[in-house]
Amino acid sequence: QVQLVQSGGGLVQAGGSLRLSCAAHGIVYNINVMAWFRQAPGEERELVAASAAGGTTNYTDPVKGRFTISRDYAENTVDLQMNSLKPEDPGVYYCYADVRTTWASRYASVWGQGTQVTVSS
Figure 1 (tube, rainbow, N blue to C red):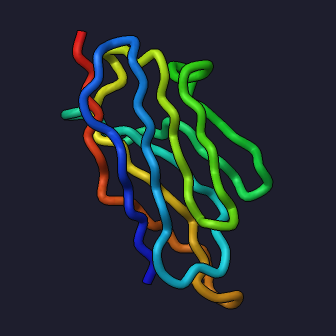
Figure 2: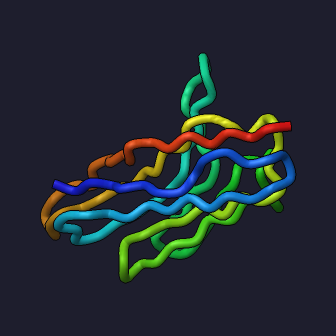
């Protein structure tokens, strides 16, 4: 069974930076997409940034130019560098991955445990 273990996050002043990290632990044959989602209180979980297996990255409009997703394909890790944080950025950030554990298995969705990001004004 594959687990995504997150680290990073915390409290930062508006305009500051934080870095989130996520590592896949367990038997991993292949990972397609790795991504970061955010869930604000009372709202649904929404995509922030994604990195596909071929290297393509995608960002939601509000974070373009401020956040950068980076992935280590050999180590099965993904980071999210968040710069120029704004009061609308806080929430619980979740790491996500589409994972195959064997060549014959289908991709399965795996989520990290979530980490709180708080921005003070």
